[in-house]
Amino acid sequence: MPQFFSSRRLQREARTVEAMIRLFCRDHHSSRAALCEECRELLTYARKRLRHCPFQEQKTACGKCPVHCYAPGKRDQIKAVMRYAGPRMLFFHPILALLHLIDGLRKPPTKS
Image 1 (cartoon, rainbow, N blue to C red):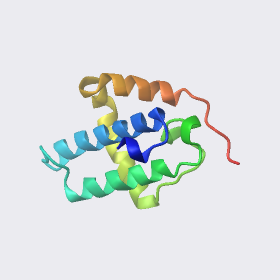
Image 2 (image 1 turned 135 degrees about the horizontal axis):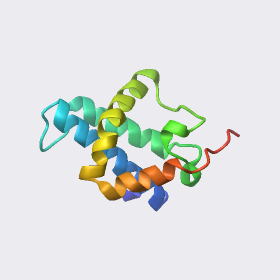
Image 3 (image 1 turned 135 degrees about the vertical axis):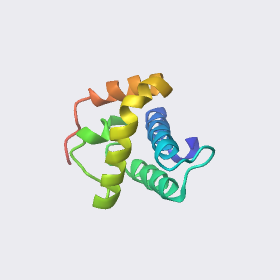
C-alpha cells in the first residue's frame, strides 16, 4: 500500500478505510480471512478515490469534504460501512479511530 500514496497521512487514511471495510465484511458477509468480492471492489474503489483526492495532505475526513468524489451507489455503500464500523473502531482499532476523529476536526478545504 505505501507505494500508492504520497504521504503518511494518506497511507493512514487508507488503512482506516480498509479496517472499516474489513469489520463490516466480517460481520455482514461472514468473511473471516478475506474480503468478499463486493467489499474487495469497494476497497479498491475507495483507494482509487483517495489517490485522486484533490486535497491530498490537507484533506479532512471524507464526510466533511466539500467535494463528493464517490459515485452515488458507492457513496451509499461506504456510508453504510462507516455507520456500522465507525463506533466499533474504538474497540478494534483505537489508535486509527482516534486519529480519524482528529482528522475530522480539521477545517474542510475549500474548492478551487
